[in-house]
Length: 235
Ligand SMILES: [Zn+2]
Ligand SMILES: [Zn+2]
Image 1 (cartoon, helix red, strand yellow):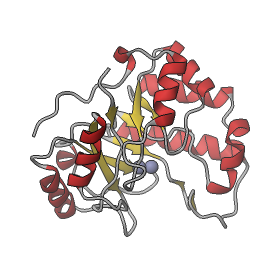
Image 2 (tube, helix red, strand yellow):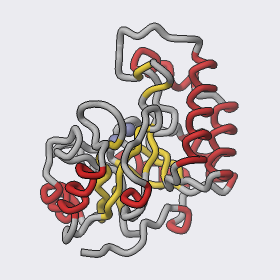
Image 3 (cartoon, helix red, strand yellow):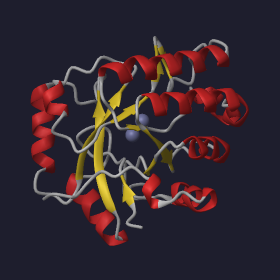
Image 4 (cartoon, protein in one colour):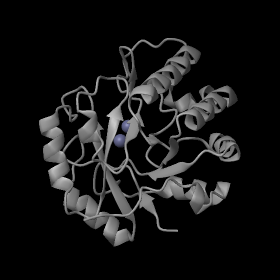
């Protein structure tokens, strides 16, 4: 199986590497790689056609898949026709209404309510933006992450799997966040969902680090035909 890391970041959003550096890390490991910088509201994200054109230009001619991680909890101002120039798109939940998942001081509603809002957001956005991969499924507000194993229960897995099948997106197996759990992966595998591998790497030590993703592929027995195919590399 050719290993593809389809989720990495560069200096075009909040990563530390240039696209060329991501490319060389992947090459050294013998992986194919996709660059998927953040797109949406917020100072570090790409959110205009001009910025997005500049980003695409920087990826042109490199042996990388072109992608973007759409921040589903915010408004994405990049035109659909420019997003359509990507080889594939990723959707990621980092906030719901006014709750930022990276604010450790935020007051939290009940965890069931958070899950319902996350599922609702994924569904609404999937109807408007075609994304082929859902990033880090089940990423929770920072305070709740230590309890993720308890919070992300069977009911969550079932609902997530239903959405993945209905809107035809692959579930990312994220090495950075060690999500989804092995149990959720098994549920999704049985139901016919496809997967994608992602480091969510932002720097030298994290780009193309796929330890958890590869461990889950092996442990769950995920065959290559069940892994999202980003197509042929151009450039
Ligand atoms: Zn993300
Ligand atoms: Zn990311």
